[in-house]
Image (cartoon, rainbow, N blue to C red; front, side, top):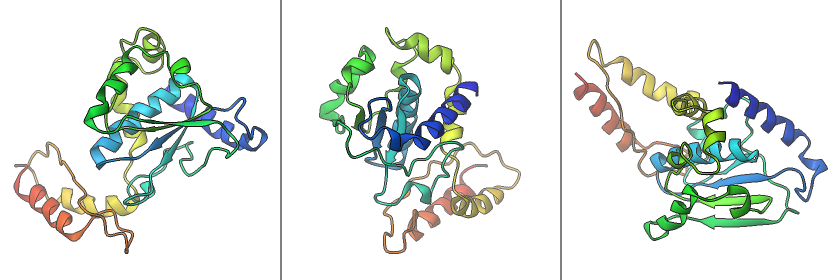
Length: 218
């Protein structure tokens, strides 16, 4: 909790003064380029948040398709995901998406992150979560354990992915209908987004979720 609070203060303070550093001499960023489905995105978001926390980079999101991230999640306290890095900064895209590129992500087991990703603005596209590498990382493991510990990831995840009010309005009544049964989990796949209505969930997916909630967890 202390590390999360400290990073949120760092994040907001840095962005307040970003205009004073137009070439990113002092302020460095990592930008998540969202790819694939919701489950992949959540795990990659967690990975890059921890990466940003350890390396003191400002985490930003490039998540506008197939729907904006704020359609489904609230911005965590102290974080501004809508900000953009200055255009005058040197940058590079590291594309680890697709199974053929798994070996590139595996390099993160041993990478010195500051040397491997030296650009002031690092754009990263991957569908593969790599936070599991951090705890025993040769170089960064001690930093990770000091900040998060061995059991802190669930708390970080809860901080990052709080449902937006519109999402809670949809799911809350469904979960209330479970009755006295024990709800184990709901695996929600959002299906095709209706971009014309700017919706995060379609009718077919909603009906499927109702069926799961009302018939499965008893």
